[in-house]
Image (cartoon, rainbow, N blue to C red; front, side):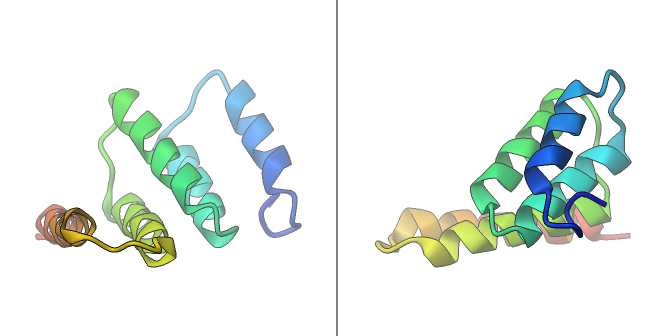
Length: 99
């Protein structure tokens, strides 16, 4: 809701204060960051999800791939490490989404 109203920062503050976060709330926050163009923040939220012990689902993976793609596309000096990271990310996403 906050994201749709242009109040992404308020949404992050509410999320930070939530005592119980679930996969849906984590995924919504990743999505809000990506939609707001804050790709690096989306990746940070994804890492927080992993550290929390939850396992991402297909929706979470797709949002994290969009974050990585945004960071990659904003890089001014593309090197082999950046390309390898993106290729590896897409490969991991494909394996995670495999039935």
